[in-house]
Length: 217
Figure (cartoon, rainbow, N blue to C red):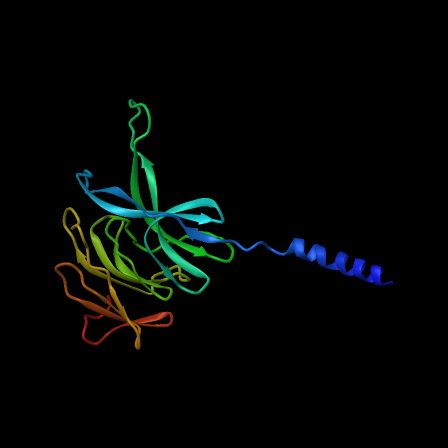
């Protein structure tokens, strides 16, 4: 009877052990310095650092810049990728590094999602994160309108968007510095180049312009 009991227990436990999901491991690889070409004719270059992002031991993406923990399970990080710049008449490949958008990464499941930030421009927008809020200067599709944007990753539309200025001709190298966050109350300050500073209070899914700044359009 004792042997039959042990056998019955094994029959019950073993399938459960096999059915248990294997923990996923997200990790960054060794950082590498690469050259990034800038400008309309790519006449300028800067050095950035890229890191591979691995799921278990499989390469999933390349990233650049620091990551931001939203929770103990989810974080965001900016994507980097290579584009082939070779002409049809040239043999071989000519790979150039580019900065992409932001990725939402779930450590527990290994899921990686591309975030769609409104009016985010890979060249001009410098995103500043607080909790699951992103603040940055966005550029419209026509390349002329620059707006202060506050959005939440769970929202399809920005929580706040105000046009800062209408630019004529080529955009400046930097539309505005990275916005600065503070807590209690949650507030973000924009400092557009050549424009007036703007502060925005964030309360849950709503935002208000602070009294000492121009009203929202």
